[in-house]
Every structure is written in structure tokens, then in C-alpha cells.
Image 1 (tube, rainbow, N blue to C red):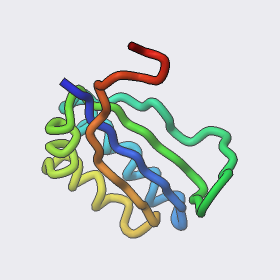
Image 2: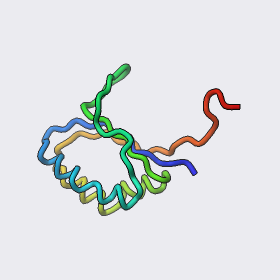
Image 3: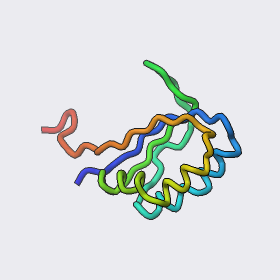
Length: 103
């Protein structure tokens, strides 16, 4: 079964409010098996537009990734940011097929 991912791009406008969100979101991520693959870090926008922060969270499945988004725990954490960030987020199913160079 393919894993699920959250891919987010974030501009923080109210750091204190965003910290409240960050402090609370781990409850939902842990419940649904989420783990950070990318959380901030250096980057170079080589094409298109970007935001200041990038995040990739891996879940055991696409269904778990969607369930986390819709969960009361995540929505409560999200409310704590109080408009402190602009976020572009997609929930996407991973790929389990053949890779380049494989037969």
C-alpha cells in the first residue's frame, strides 16, 4: 500500500501564534503515524514560486494522511495558529510503482 504525504509551503506572519500551532500539532501527527521528512531547512527555489518554510510529513497511507487533516486533534491545533501563517498544503498518495532503471 502506498504511503500518504502532506506537502506544505508556509509563510509565518505571527511567530508566537504559529508556535502555539507547532506545540499542538504533534498530537494528531502521532495518532495517525505521521513523521517529518522535511521540516524547514535550507532550500533553493529553482523554478516557480516559494514560501519561507517547506514541510513534508509521511503517513502510513493516504487514508491516514487525510484522516489526520480532518481529525478534531489537527483542527484544534490549526485553530491555535490564529491566522499566524499562510499555508499551501496538499495531501497526496505516494507512488509504489517501478522506478527509473528498474526492469
